[in-house]
Each structure stands twice: as structure tokens, then as C-alpha cells.
Amino acid sequence: SLREKVRMLEGRVERLSSNEKTLQETLITAQALSEDLKKTALKESELLISEAEVKAEKVLDAAHRRVAKLSEDIREMKALRARVGTAVRTTIETHLALLESLATEEPDDPVLDGRVAYLTKTRRASNAADPEEG
Image 1 (cartoon, helix red, strand yellow):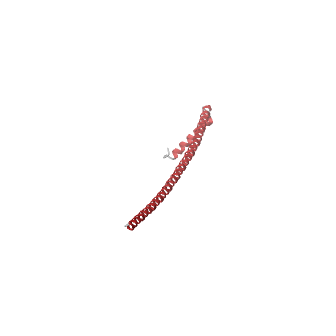
Image 2 (tube, helix red, strand yellow):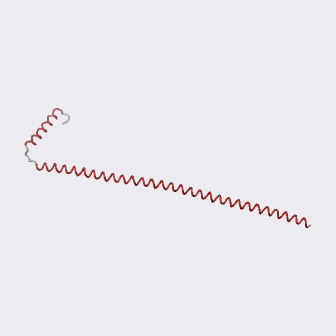
Image 3 (cartoon, helix red, strand yellow):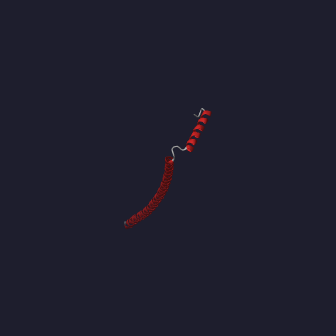
């Protein structure tokens, strides 16, 4: 009968309408989930980038400190080289002056000979008094 057919078609339309509503809700849920996943992925990528930037800053800071330390070490070594050079030069000049003064002295200086004789005599006397040292 026509009424049964109409009821059957109305039931079918109702089921299709219900299925359509379910599909729309599922699609909306999937879209929302997709947006949430995108936001989460974006936040995670921003966090990773931020962490990488912090690590890079630490590496750069350590490198700058190392460069500063090496520069300071180089400066100290240059200063030490200058001080050692000056000390060596002074020592050489002192020895040269001593050699020059010895070269200009009279070979037979009675005062000098007396001092050398006195020192030799004193040393011999102390060695004789303390036989373990000689």
C-alpha cells in the first residue's frame, strides 16, 4: 500500500538523514582533531627551535669565553717573552761589562793579587779545619 511505502521511504529518509548527521559530526570532529594536531605539532616545533637556540647560545658563549681566555693567554705569553728578553739582555750586558772590565785591568794588580791570595789562604784554612768539605 501507498502508506506503507510512504512510511518506509520516510524511515529510509530518516536513517539517511541520521547517517548524514553522523558523517557531518565525524567530519567536524576529524577537522577539529586535525587542527589540534597541527597546533600541537607547531608548538612542539617551536619548542624544539627554542631549545636549539638556547643550546646554540650556550655553544657560542662557551666559544667566546674560550677565545677570550686564549687571547689573555697569548697576551700573558707576549709579556713574559718581553720580560725574559729584557732579563737575558740585562744579564748579557752585565757579563759583557764584567768581561770588558777584566780586559782593561792591569794583569799584575797587587791589590787584586792580595785579595786572591787572602781568599785562597782562607779557603785552604777552612778546608783544613773541616776535612769532610774538601
